[in-house]
Structure formats: structure tokens, C-alpha cells
Length: 317
Image 1 (cartoon, rainbow, N blue to C red):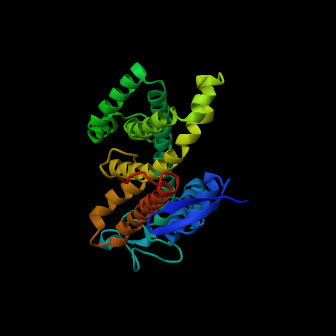
Image 2 (image 1 turned 90 degrees about the horizontal axis):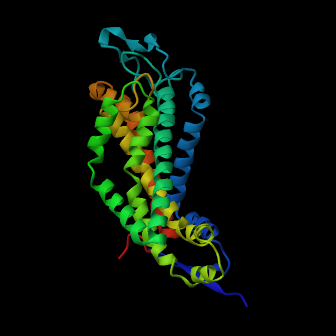
């Protein structure tokens, strides 16, 4: 006789799933029934591939991100692009940058590499540090839990944006991408640590964990075989939700002029430079802003879908 389990999704009737179906199989099946999640996944994959293969993708347009094309701008009109829509043409697919004539397609592609690299690297730091701290606090308890919980409270109460701006302003002859990654990641781990701590407190009292402990399993084995698989779902869902925040933070710091420095392109830097031309060349502002908007929206929608699949009670009373 075949038994079934049900998965409840908000706004949708419970769907039956065969017994023995793993969480990843259930997640794939559920995502296929969500057009918004599939579209978001496609957008995320598109920008990820674009960032990973930025030199190859950027070369398709025939221009380097730091290459000037003075013939594409009008020197008698303050360097405004020639032609409609910011100079869009068969030669410059997304138009050109005012004054310099640099190709926007090449700069947007290479800007995606910088912006997403910082966002993903900072997210990796946040997840590793948060999971380690949350599991340790929840599993060992006592003094370990007290110290780590107070450290979480202290970090979350610190004015992170002010510290980021100050640190990025003071540091000069350093790798700006590495520094931004470390500074952004420094303040992001307490949120995920609290989620993992609560999940670990629940899991460590389950029967199968008690059985493993009675059987003589070490703490390391219990943590790696019993606890970590149990917190993987909420961590994956939360990770996709913090990525857009990391992207927006990098863009904000670059917009304020304390992020990566020219000629290295980033979306926030391009948006900041386009403010002076928003009324005469609006496409210069629209192109990087649209890329930033689509990326953040796609990660947010995908994160919401994964949260509903892996942690259906998360965020609900």
C-alpha cells in the first residue's frame, strides 16, 4: 500500500506527494507550479551567467568597459550621445555613457560581475558565520549560548551603515572589492544566527537526536548528521532573501562614492554618475537601475517561494 504526505502552500490546495520524496524533489515540484518563481529563477540564472562570463559576454558588443568612443557623443552638446535612446544602435546595443562614449552594455555586464561578486561573497560569509554561531549557541547552550547571543545583540544594535561608510572612506590603498565584502558580511550574520539557533533548540530535543546520543554518537557526528540537515531548509530560504539586501547595500555604498572606484564599473556607481544626466539622457539612468531592480526583485520572489517550500511556517503567526 502506498502512503502519501501532503504539502500545504498558501493560497493553494494541499498537494499530495509520494512518501519518500526528498525535500529537494518536493521543492522542484512546487517551484514548477509557481510561474513567478520560475521567471525569477530564469532572471537570476541570466545575471549569474552574465557575471561569471563577463569578459566573454561583454566582448559580444565589441567594446571594452573602459574604451572611449568620442564619435558616439556630440562635443557641441556637452557630450550627449548621438542618436535616440542614449545612443542605442547596432554598434552600441544599450547606448553610450555621456561625455566619454563608453559602451553601456560592456559596463553593465562588468558591473554585474562586481556587484554580484560582492553580494555573493558577503552572503557566503554571513551564512557560514551565522550557521556556525547559531548551531553552537543552540546546541551547547549555557555560557556558549549567553556569549554568542549577547554578541548577536551587540552586532545588530550597531549603526552598521555609518560604520560601513566610515570604514570605506578611511581605507584607501586596499582592495575595495575585498574590503566591501568583509564590511558588509560583518554585520549580516546575527539575523541568520538567530534563526538557526531557534531551529537547533527545537531539533536537539527530537527523539532521533536523543537516540543518536544514547547510541554513543559524538557531538560532531550529531551536529553534522542530525542537526545541520534539519536547519538546511530554512538556511537556504533565508540565504536567497538576504542576497538582494547585499546587492542593494553594495549599490548604496557605491552610489555614495565609498564603494568601488572608477574605472572599475558597478551598478551603484553608474547610477550615481547618471544623476547629472537624468533629464538630458534618461537612458543612462534607466539601464543600470533596471538591471538592479530586476535582480533584487528576482531574488526576493525566489526567496519567498523557497521559504514557503522549506519553511512554510516562517514569517507566519
